[in-house]
Length: 307
Image (cartoon, rainbow, N blue to C red; front, side, top):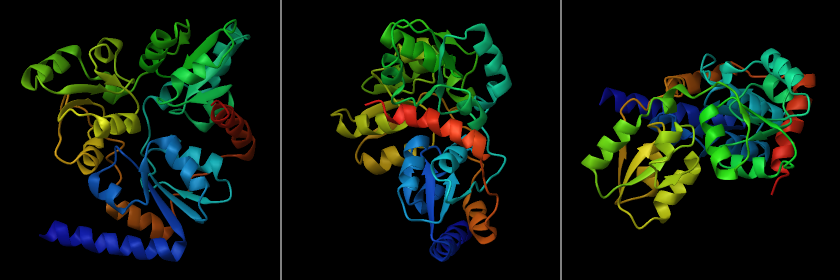
């Protein structure tokens, strides 16, 4: 009862502060359920930043990880961007630095660098075009066939895209710690326990895991598929936070995680207290240096221009 009362109190404080600050709250679908519930918009990282840029809010509170808040700052330079938990990072994004990428570009000066959105602003500034898990196939298909491609930083997503497009690519040795944990044995065990369930997998999982899926897509794509499917049971191979939206948007259906290990500690670092504190103090603010922002914005805009 105490926790419920505390949640209600914090929620009301957040609503009041949000109105005072003319703020908008964004939450990634991997966030805690109570954080998703106070958000104005819930979705994947780039979708959230694009929607925030289109609002008349003065302040963006990004309940996610650091590279997501940076993307919001890149697309909305006139707004204040707050990241409630400043230490919420992304191990995969940290697996490639601007310096490392510059070195690789010297080795392959004619190559096109495709950067997964899960990268820092500095890395995006050194890249030619961005992609998301939802549009990575389309982005790679848009690159002339005679061009070599460096795909950073997620080798699993890169292998999935290479298989879909038939394009050979130089893949960075990076991965998502959470998705890479999923094993074929765990998926097989889940299928034995739930033989009627369809298997939904995120493309950040290993190739041998995505090969077992009935459907592979980004977080929003997985939710959309579950809503539209006639199936009533699903095995889910992505971060556990998605279950909140799956149950909300798919009443009468059941969802089972492929493994209990599908929990990202960085995504779970944000809570209601930190959201309230960020709005109260207007800290921590996330900014991107103008020269970095200009180059990173061009990388994002090239992606957005691909239809």
